[in-house]
Image 1 (cartoon, rainbow, N blue to C red):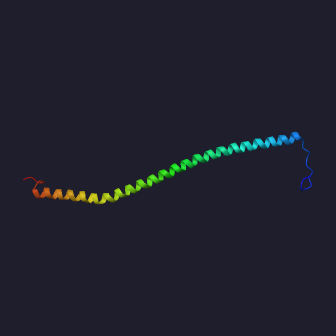
Image 2 (image 1 turned 45 degrees about the vertical axis):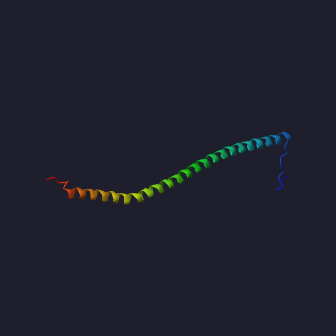
Image 3 (image 1 turned 180 degrees about the horizontal axis):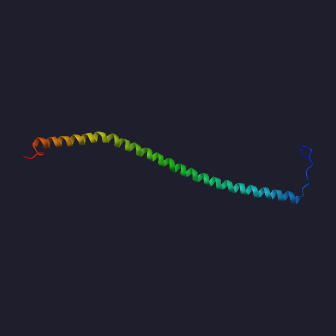
Length: 99
């Protein structure tokens, strides 16, 4: 009898062994699936590490582009000043409108 007073069927040794064999097969299948899951988790971990490395590299690239952008404004002003001075020099020499 079980804890609730129900009568349990009498099992033979063959029935008990069959249930143990079924349980062993089930446990082996669970362990195989767990191995696959661990492998997939390792691959996912590597992909995530690669993605984080890419983002870190992109962060560095954007820093460099930001520095270049900060340099571009004064450089453009200097070039514009040079062009204006050259135009003024040519105009003063009379190079724009020949006589």
